[in-house]
Image (tube, rainbow, N blue to C red; front, side, top):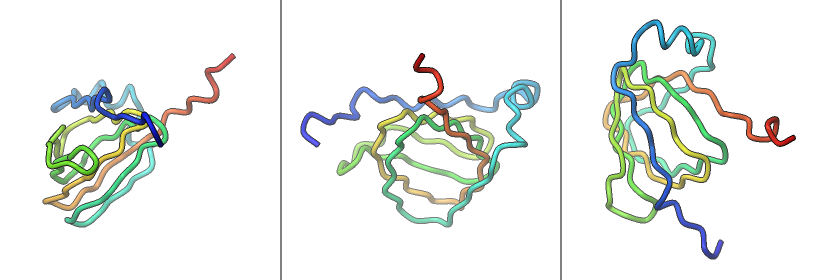
Length: 107
C-alpha cells in the first residue's frame, strides 16, 4: 500500500516484569505459541502483548537490515498494530500471547 510506514511503530520491551504484574495480566491463562530457530516475516494486524517463557529474538524492520528490537526469555513485549517485520529467532521461542481487540472500543 502506498504511504504505509512502520517507522513510527515502536516495540515496547519490559525486562523481567514482576510475578505480581504478570499474574495481574493473567498471562498463564493466555494461549501459547512457539517456533523453532529461523527467520519469519510477520505482520501484526492487531496489537499483541506477549511474555517469552524461552527464546531469543532480533526484530528487523521489513526489507531492511536495521535491528529495531531484541528480546528473550523473561521479557514482556508489546508489538504495535500495523508492524511489518522479520523475526530472526536464534533460540526457539515459547510464549504466552494476547491480541488486543480494537473493534470493541469504538463506541
